Length: 216
Image 1 (spheres, one colour):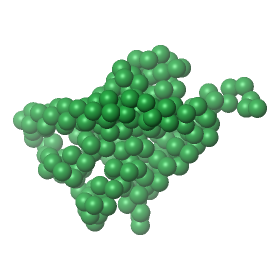
Image 2 (cartoon, one colour):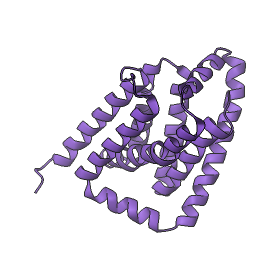
Image 3 (tube, rainbow, N blue to C red):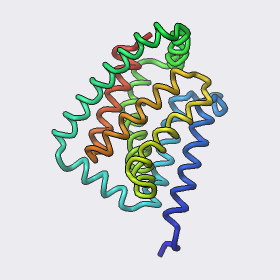
């Protein structure tokens, strides 16, 4: 039997580990022979394994969500991704007008693709990174922190943390994008309680932004 307080301590420790790891990634501290895509994918898989270990209910929630209302969830995810892409499309136009340097920051984001083919990046985004981020950030972290703090405080706290780990990149456009996405997908998960819809939205949005219809 797990000791009293084990789940709460695990929540704090896993949250801290996720924050530190991704802060280091976006700051380039862990880069060497391994690129950012591999580091993100590997980290997400490790943290998800730990999340499943400390919260056996997590796997049941995932299974139940993917099994029920599949068509509705997928449709919601597609609509969400397209609408979010439109938000970023308009936001990008506005940002270029009020903050001309944003184009340089945007190019810096796309420079992360250097040395990797679109196919390789697309596979990482579609099979590991997109699904993994939603399972970890919304399905595990937001769910637990919302249970601890309340639905809205939990949503905002995790969204802010999601943006904060990008601060080490020193790229304000990336941080702003992460905050918008964190709030968007956080609200979607709070409103519809479907991790599948979030996964579909995140994956499709990633592919649109990085591979299909990039902004730079």
